[in-house]
Image 1 (cartoon, rainbow, N blue to C red):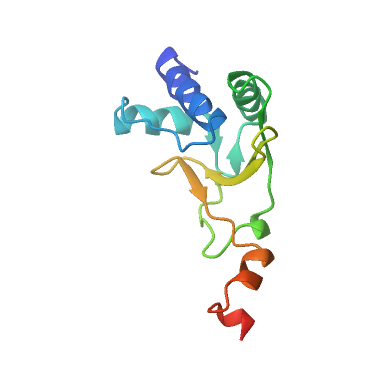
Image 2 (spheres, helix red, strand yellow):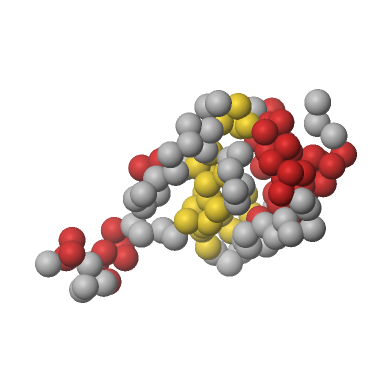
Length: 132
């Protein structure tokens, strides 16, 4: 059962993600964060109802400017998060415009921004071994 302490963690994370910034959960103890994440993440990812509600919170906190959508694990640069509970997401800011890859799950920290190293970056960086 989700508690008000859990809700506070989720709300803080959603508000920060709505600003396209990594959640600052320093106001919570490590145990509070761990318990909150374990309540909604199962072995193979987040509970669908919670994930949909969390997406709605981000959208609401950003006044519909930022949305969180599913992303494929293949979209993320190596090394990949090894936890089977990891949820791969993409934050999309329609105003800026900007995108940010996000991995979230019952680990520390529970929300991780991942740099996008897509093909365009490989073309621009002559020192990248894939371009030699």
